[in-house]
Length: 116
Image (cartoon, rainbow, N blue to C red):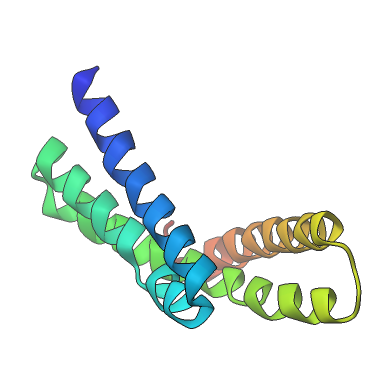
């Protein structure tokens, strides 16, 4: 249980630091947020927990395929906010759209034989 709390604390601190940097310097915050820090952390935790290179390889490949449908969210959010759509509605639209794109990616990848 302590190990889980340590992982959660480190991951939470990372998010808090990024949000604080973004509050002061949005560009630098965007750079930090765009880094695959959560993916790297997840791979490090997975390696520490399992030592299984195949699991890490599969996780990295799945991350790549699920990254693709998340990209449009980062275009839709500024577009909607600049068009005057409220923040919470913008976030809801972006999240629903991203979930739909994730579902589409899962369906398409299964048809193409890509295992996620």
